[in-house]
Length: 381
Image 1 (cartoon, rainbow, N blue to C red):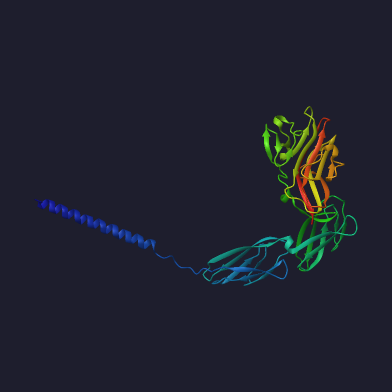
Image 2 (image 1 turned 90 degrees about the horizontal axis):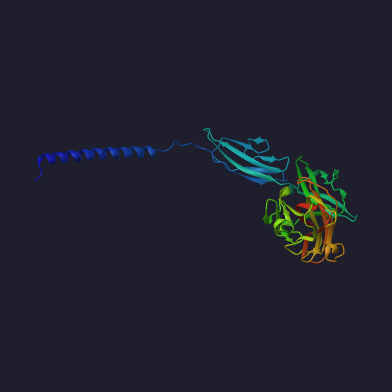
């Protein structure tokens, strides 16, 4: 049987529980009301625009698409600005420019949009260098959609010209970086560079034909702290006379291709480092360029380009009918990565087929070696 005291106690507990629940519900409602309170509305501008190329490569129209603004400020990335609605702007040189449009609303709020204008030299003008009827002489010209009023030429051999379309005589078998700076009738300028030879302009095809061309060269095998075998090139046993059967790769001077018979080290007789190009070469004029840190050659050291899948033996380089071109390296010059010793072997391919490039050497006298930074293959454009 429940006593009066128990009934009273139960009633009090129920009342307290109701008060607590009511307090919790009131607090939750207050918190929810605070959280969902709307922010004060602002009337910010919306910013948008499109860039439309103009009548020449340096001129652009900036078409404004913004709304809800009072003022506009255009910054064109070349220290110039405009407050026009849809301005037209002329750039004075090639380059990449960040365009910044700032819109300000009546209440002072702002918004921005950034876009880039990219003017590459090649979009302004193209440099043409073609053979003439005069041996080893090239005719230069500039082609552009802009109205070109002046051209300054640097032929890459410490000679220059201000002619519009000059002729230039070059040494045969060498490569040069020629450049031209064109000026338009509006005063804008762009500088275009191109590799050229006495046969005209050339293109770099190294990446399509040669694996591991340097710099740096990659090693496929290593022993000790210095020596290794150069990856992707065939290195015969005559070259692998370093410790642990290494040869063809040297960690010195930034990971170079190497042959070395120095001091009391074993001789190298008919040593070969070679690679057959990844694709057969089509008929045309080519240039195989090698850039050294140094070499010391007293006996026989040849850079060779030959038809087929291998290079001839060292004693046959000058007489083998498959040899397309070679350079005999003598003396002991020294260079640096910024100023290397460069040799270029020009050769002609008359029928499509495999071609192999590389070195053959015999080092019997003491203190002979080479350290090579890189190789490059170019084709007449």
